[in-house]
Structure formats: C-alpha cells, structure tokens
Amino acid sequence: MKLRVMLADDHEMIREGLRLLVNSQADMETVGEAENGRKAVALAQELRPDVIVMDVSMPELNGLEATKRLRTLCPDSKILSLTRHTERAYLHQLLEAGASGYLLKQSASQELLRAIRAVAAGQKYLDPAMTEHLVENAVSRRTARGAPADTDLSKREQEVLRLIAWGYSNKEIAARLELSVKTVEAHKANAMRRLNIHSRIDIVRYALLQGWLREQ
Image 1 (cartoon, rainbow, N blue to C red):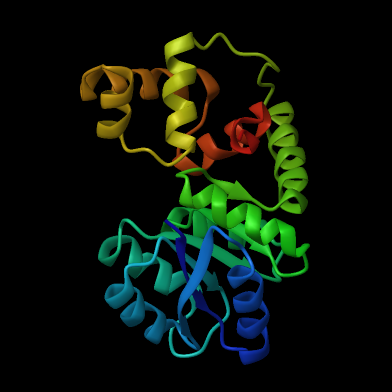
Image 2 (spheres, helix red, strand yellow; image 1 turned 180 degrees about the vertical axis):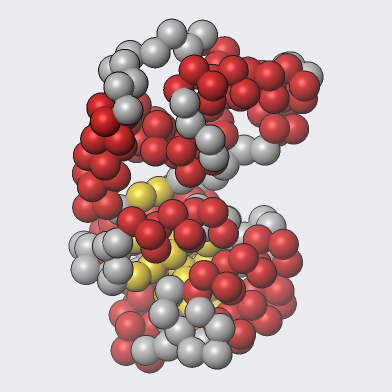
C-alpha cells in the first residue's frame, strides 16, 4: 500500500515540484494539495493522509497554527514541516506543536523522500543541516552549566527517554516496555532530574546528542 501524502504550500510551482517528486516513487502518492493553512486543515480532515508536507509560511493560517489544530483533528496524520527558516526558534515551536519532522526547502530532493518515509514510520526527522546546530547548542548549554558529559541513567530510563523523543506517549511507552504508566512517569521524572532538563524539547535535544533521532 502506498503512503498517502498531502501537500500544503502557497506556491503552485513548489507544489508541482513536490507532487512530481512524490508521485515518481513506487511507495507513495500525492492525494491532495492546499494553498493555505485553513484549506490544509479542512482537506486533511477529509483525506486523512499518512503524511502532510506543511509549509510554515502560508496565508490565512500559517503552518504552525495549522499543525497545532491537526494534532487534535487528525492525530494519525504525521506532519512534516517544510521551510527555509534555519532559526532554532522555528524548529522548537513546530516540534512543540506536534510536527514529526522539520525539513529545509534548500535541502536535496532525496532528503524530502527520506523524511516522508521516516515520519510515516513513526520516527522523528530533523534536517541534517539543523542537527549540527542543535547539537552544538546543546553541548554549549550543558558545558556552561557544568553538567557532566556522561550521565548515570539506567538502561530503562534511557529506553523511556528514547521513546519520548520518538514521539510516543506515556501510555504507548508503557505498553511497549510492559510497564505501568506510573512506572514510565517515574523513569521519565528521574531521568529529567538527573539531566537537569525540563521539557519534551529538552529531551529531543538530548536525544540528538545521543544520535537517537537519526536511527533507521
């Protein structure tokens, strides 16, 4: 069965290029297109695509707000943010909003295909150009506050953080690891305290340092 991909971008030429690229693959097809965020939200509810390639800068409703709405309205559709912005602030906001991937428009076409397949498989995907900046920033922040290079996380705490970084909920993690939800929450809290981190985005940053988000 082919991956059903929806495209949301306000530039027709970009949508056409994306459509041709997606439809050239044996394992995916374009099922719909939207030229603004409001239409993207409405069309996604109708089509229920596997992956939504979402431009960040669109009229009527931007990609960030559209992503926030679709996380609730279409929780099974994975959202891949597509943008020219390399600022970390954009990445952090979109991940918090529920995007599963972040890809730069200036990247090679093969990166888009790789990203679509990754998020469709339930993985997180970050553009390689962004990964380097994030890792450097995370290392600098940890060094500045005197955090040790290595931590004493238990194997189970590492497993829990890894799955959180991949986007699984506490309930899903509990089922995968055959633990109770309370135990998962305890491992998460202990690990975050040891690492001196305070949010899901901090967990994603830590996962980047460990190379977890680039696994296939």
